[in-house]
Length: 261
Image 1 (cartoon, rainbow, N blue to C red):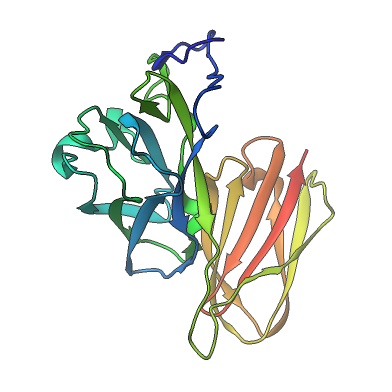
Image 2: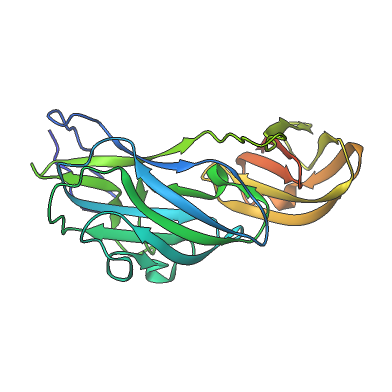
């Protein structure tokens, strides 16, 4: 059984085979919801499983800097954990990461609330598309790799995963869910069209995400009532692969996946 090391090199990543732990991963939970441009949103991070046996935490949060700008650590719930000491904002100059290494659990922590982080919302977007825990990360091309883990008192390490709560609205008019859009031809070789139908005319925004959740293109658009068609040029996509194309308006989200050759 290979024992997880905290510092991982590019050519020798180790995997934790944690047979005695009660769980094979810890889940940092975030509520999935729609975010509105020019507002502030506080992300409440909780953990699904008990971390009463935790001795240390090490993890990195990725956020999309096209859609979010860091504002503040609102609250920290783990005793002994301090916002301005145990969180590193934009480590190594990375404007899309927040990291933390915490080795100072004074007593077993039996709660599930971890911390709250506030961001400025730069564009209409959805939580699950713009923020997550990075399973493996590094801060520059020459640095070592690290893994997001909970280290138990036994010395064993358990990976951290991201889990999104589905969102619900108690209002009379529920928040809009994602609606399907169509891209054709699919796969894209030179140009494709994104087609969707809107119930009203409004301003909107098109954002293209790669499968790692990174925004590779974003632009304001005009959405008309009825059928809309937007050309998607091959030059919008940096490399071949699978992408998610999303249109956000004040009342709807339209999404389609597109394979780019």
